[in-house]
Image (tube, rainbow, N blue to C red; front, side, top):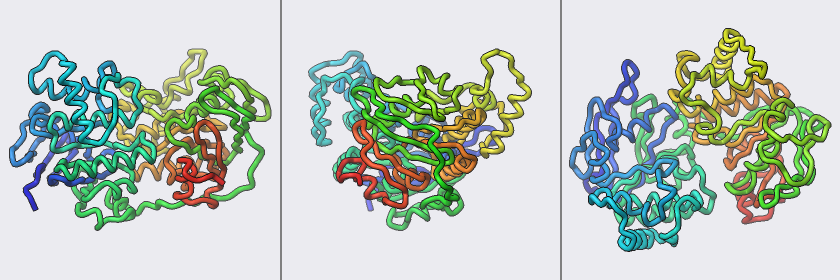
Length: 496
């Protein structure tokens, strides 16, 4: 085998007494796709920041093509390493060509964009990838999948030999994931190496040749992907056996619906939606990005007003004109993007939990709120030394539990959750599912809005399929498997 294009040896990193990485080593060869797997808090993000020169290491070496790197992001980029984060770090006001050429221009000391050369560089790079995107378009208006391809093109235009991709399929449809896989396969043949960070086991095995698993800052296993299966991967990541099939629950007779819609329509977004959900029931609303699933959920919560149809809540036709009206009626909504919509990142954990329980009168019993926040931290098993640290210090799974704790403090009768485990590791995902099952058991109606088909099958009593703004199918989890559900969601087969 050829010499590795990336070699990491003996990496240590600590923040005060907290060890983040201990003796981490991995190699990456040209044309290889290696998965870096691990729970949130395992050290993946810190390792990526160290190899890209953003964070200094305490000990160890990072070498690209045999040359040791200093703690300098520019040196890492110039050596051929590029990191593509989930937000892609593109400039929305610039064109496709200007974004693709940006790093190369900076590396060459160019202070101004040269429209002709930028365009030609973009065309050549996109052609290499087999992608047809107009280089003159502003990036701002492009779909997520196109933005990701532009981020890859930007790395290639700067002669990247190693591309690190952080959760690259989070917002992609099934067909877009397949397209990305084809592009990566083609670039592998050109000798480009990829470090692929993902929580989705099926995509880890589809994309990756090799796997390195981090747990508590240490490499606990690595090898060819063929040596792993989903059970082993989950066990290595968490240190315990993880059940990935349908979660156990007590079946109860379905009560009268607490919420029902009739002909609910928002022109151009969703149309003629009839759905119902009963106390003590989990219903999954499954659809791809752009299917109208999020807009429908926001209409049920009073954030987007429908144009036609009716919402009936607890036997009365209601028209929620703002979220506060829905909240006062007993409805809670957990947003998909917890970082920008669900949390105050620089505020203490306790304040984040308590904020939804504050009275409009302005009279606040801070002592009681703090005590309730401590109880919520304990009940939801939020891993923190106390309620005083900021939410930004928590892992993704623990941040999501803070959002859940906030809304559970209001004792809602209907809990709507949009992507409840997006960006959450496999162990935390199971624990969040158990929290939702406890809500179900207590009589709360739970509506889960998701594109995670395994999650829908594991959790729900009923599954509603949404395609292009319409409910096209309804199933119980026992009536359908993941393959048929995937076909129904993508319109590749009729939903029955």
